[in-house]
Length: 85
Image (cartoon, rainbow, N blue to C red):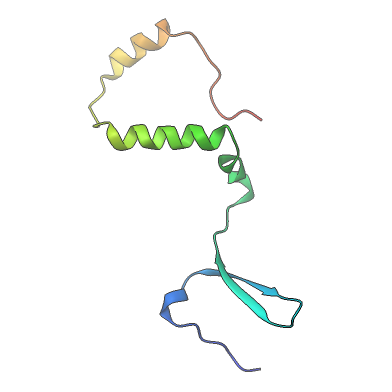
């Protein structure tokens, strides 16, 4: 069986091969998302992640005082942590 070389441009990429009705083949690059991370692409998680990344991009990092954070944690209204299903 003859091989197919796509060159360096496609090295390390994941490709999808699709057979079309007219007998031709369509080869496309695809991004694979692990099933355990699919929730990150669904709303409202997707929007929350985008807002967090935008905030992080425009906010300068600063050093935290762990003792002060512990004091603040006791004053905050408790809310569930982690991902909801």
